[in-house]
Image 1 (cartoon, helix red, strand yellow):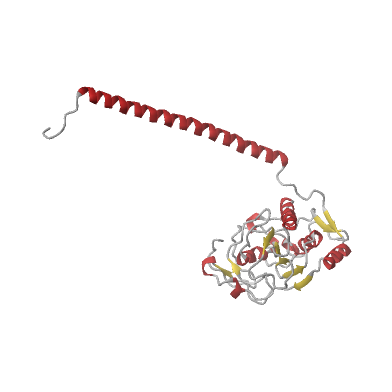
Image 2 (cartoon, one colour):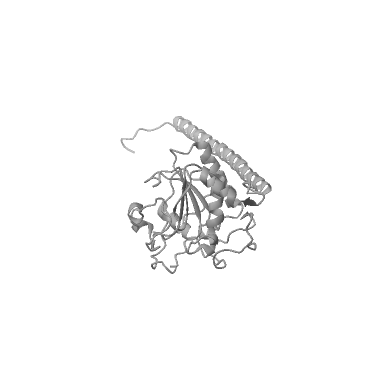
Length: 294
């Protein structure tokens, strides 16, 4: 072709050899990478299977073990020593309306004192079960729906509760959940979370919440925490839909409780449909479509 430099045959062959060599090197590199990746994946799969087998063998996190038996006098003494005060023992007057997360008013507009809330309007969907504590403050407006189904929450002020105590609280919630204090489909469980915005109204360090019930204490005490669960979890409390979570009577009781095993303060348990159940109860406004919990 006119104007184009002619490449000698010898040079063309050299260039072709170099191109083939580069191609072979690239192919070898890809092959080595593929072998390394295959080995790594194999090791990962073995590790996962081994971990699952170990978890199955060990039975996961340890539960309660023996039944927790509380004495009413012991509970009264523990509450006094922990500086506990019943802030409220009834639901607020506001209807338990359901809101889509995207259109719900801010928590400060939805709730007045006491905070954290113990009843009232809330998100249309529950928060999922957390088997230990949360490092960040949980969404109060979503937890309202969990409370409506019978959940119990132990909030704490991180400025007043040290790291070791927070670990004890998280271990407590995990053990109870593993022992049957949960109904995941209804979002019922034991929750532990810091509470900094707007802060615990009473100024105390720990705030226990169940539907229509607020108990605030100067310090964490496991006996106090267990008593709240014993009296308020699932169908033991006054949650409008607490029947979704039957109380596991074989796991915790008062020593002088003469009630037959399984007897509760509300109607027999109903089979929960899903964690986002939004069917209105007697004192609820019809709910909008279920919202996605942020």
